[in-house]
Length: 245
Image (cartoon, rainbow, N blue to C red):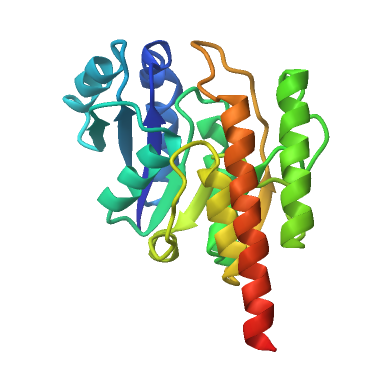
């Protein structure tokens, strides 16, 4: 079985410096333990620092690392879609560049997939208490608010729609018509999975604080983008009700 880990990068040179210690050895051990092949697809989204230079240097010495790049910054969603289009793997795992979700938790995704064979396994820091203690209060408030609104719209027993840390069955992920260009792509994907009737399960994972660099999220823009997705969910569910009646 082939697994691709897709990681969007934008001005993450300090985090890239730590991959040889905190990412690759851990994933190599996981691949050996599960007897699967894991490659990395890093998509540099128009970084203005030395991120592209550093990740290209790593790729030159590791056969399982592929680097794709955008000439200008287009957003997390655009970077993820570029990675999705490139890979031919059976499963796709998405991770953030700053490792706020740790690679040590990848086995939780894999175990759930091999045990239950869903279309998506989503990591959620809301399934257990104490998994978001490092998160800043404002970010926590925003996350809880957004996730609450999605749950009300989707009417599904899902605790968290916004985090990137997930495993997807590549075949079904590539069937989705994804429109988002920014952080809200994660909510768009899981919403379309659920509306389409695909099975999604969650596993508890801890969300850590960023150690290097700055968050790229624009709160005002992401609130507006999520509201657009929510409006589309309402229209889609209305259409389905009308069609079924």
